[in-house]
Image (tube, rainbow, N blue to C red; front, side, top):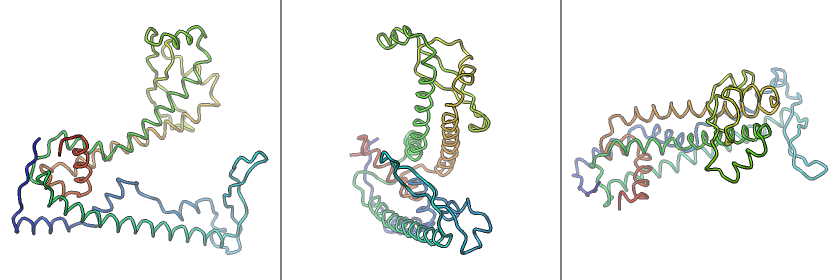
Length: 292
């Protein structure tokens, strides 16, 4: 698409600025959410293990995690006794620093929002009244959700790799050697349904693809793993839960962003909806040679 510059009239410029000033806080919150996600309350997370008595008694003792070193010099985490008042003071200080950092991010985001709006109005490379194609909006949603996809890929790779490590000892050596020497001539394992435990994996079902030659009969992999490798499967179950969690978050975010963009037809509309999203899309188009 060829983008041509079109000057805004004085009235259009005034209307444009008025609309951009609306929902300033919401735009910045949405931007911070995309960048780093919602942060929980530090005090609530850190005091989760305290009993009601410990929370009320100033002289109560609690535990704090400290890093120590074993006889080989390897760092390990241990628990040390500490007065609750000391722990509480540390938590308040940490909360204050966290709030200060968040406020600074909001301030920087507000300055960046104003900068993006000015760039959009003055841009000679793109006209904000140009139409945005459906493919470009789909690409924008992909850019906004790429972190969730990356986390899912990371979990999937770990799961497949760990299952391959657990299953390989039960495959004949000659078959593994053939796969190593002639990988293109070997039939790959088609994958199977991994059933996570109810205790660690919430009973989640997931299709997995370990990189091993086709040796096991279909549907027998889980039986073999449970019989001989059960003690190593809880970590895989945890990864399956994490994969499923990010998959659900990805779906929720895709729907949320799609709803926000349902009335977006031009770059002007996108700047009104969220200037940060406009900046993300324009940077992508520039990087890929769509805008010069």
